[in-house]
Amino acid sequence: MAGEAASVKACLPESADFYVRGRVMRLTSELKSQGVLLLLAMLTLCSLATHPLFAADIPADDAVPFTIESPFAWNRTDRYVPPDFDSFFPDDIEGGKQLDLLLEGKLQVTGIDARLALIRRGLRHCTKHRTTLLGQVGNQYIWNRKQQDPRAIELMYHASASDDSGVAHYAMYHGPTVVSNRSANLVRMLMDKYPSLDAQMQQRIAWGMQTYGDKEQTRKLLLGLLSDYQRLNDSTIGAALETYQAVFKADPPEVSRFNDVGLWVIVFHRSDVSATHPRAAEILREMVAKPLRGQEEMLLEF
Image (cartoon, rainbow, N blue to C red; front, side, top):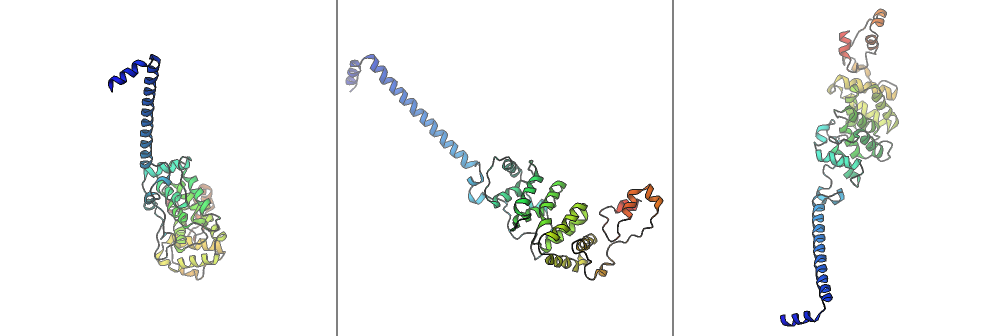
């Protein structure tokens, strides 16, 4: 066989021999290239399986960690559960990075469950406009919505307890203050927070109760809270009384039962002091039935 091959080769001109060898070399090169491409394709697929670009690529069991599910703190009926930012929002650095990518348009998350879950995971460490994000949640799922999403309300309920004043403000403004189907827990939370809020937010609470939902149901909830006033602190009682008066333009029934609640301040006003200490005089002119909103120390110093 070797002799026959040699004789055939001898019969071929040099150009033909060069052509055959060239074809073999090109074929070998093409096979190598295809092998490299196949290897790269396999490595890419393995990489995508390990590090998916989108939430849809994640296995179903891990696709939506920290999904917001019932029972919700804001509307449960067995006990009062105050908002708790630290317990509700995990300390998830990777979640913060993913939420940043979502806000930059570089991450695809489909479905309300997945979106709210990612906001829950990433809110602590998100660096991209957290207040604007909470405003979007409120506008999309709560405020002026015929069907308000209870999961979004739960998220905003707990976000209102953030130590970050901006986060707490936007969560309260776009969430609990404009919920239509109020609950006893939601009203209790609003009244607990009321003394520490600025006048604008206090007015918004009353405005929300006047504007959204069943006013008679709101009346029952406020009266129900006041009926158990022995278990409330004085500030919460004062907040409930002031809010009731603002919403319904009247005192609640049997208002005299609260006569012994809180501290009474008796003030003798002097015009010469008003000129010397105008801010102190302004505080003293507050109606004694209203909370002093954390300014008691200023009053005592005066």
